[in-house]
Length: 165
Length: 117
Image (spheres, rainbow over the protein chains, first blue to last red):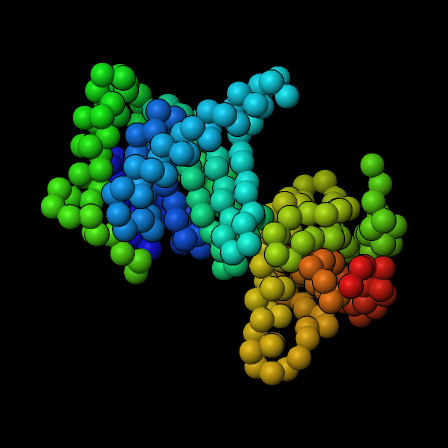
């Protein structure tokens, strides 16, 4: 599966994760909801929606974790009848990231969690210092930055750019 | 908290050369109960062994060979044995290369009787 990334340093770790864990969809984003890289999506609208929902879900589960356990939850798993979802957080020098993953019977929760640990480690090792990854996200710039990132992932002309290999 | 599998796993882990024994969910690849020696990564073993067992089971079915009764992987620094009942649970044993596989196989198949089908 092909990776489309806004920041090049995330490409190799994410490619390894997607290949090893055999996931159907992987989406790496800032906690603000800005997309950083994706694999498996074919439409920019789907990426926008998934980013917004993943960021909201992450914020909710983090606060729920603080409320229940005194510290934020770091992983969320949902098992549907055919597809499953795993949402995890990754801390790096370049800041925190959220990774949304969708998988089916080709993989398993155990495999996804195992390779997610490797991915987290590889991403943290590849991350440049925060100052090299651009300015922090400001609310006033959010929409412009989001559109810029989506344009980098999908191009400006059409929606369908990335296809499964 | 002790589960119904604790006694089964204790028996397996007592065998000479056995490093870890686990009951894992084949579908999810996660540990249900484990008896793991220090230094063994139970989560990693569970994920990989469940995936391997699932693929073997599907391959055997595709080849019209029927159900998988026992699976053994021999590697340079150890071996993995796995057996599953009719349900989602699989018993996995990780052992040294020189461990007595015959004995492990016998205990593993005996332990299977304790699993829900």
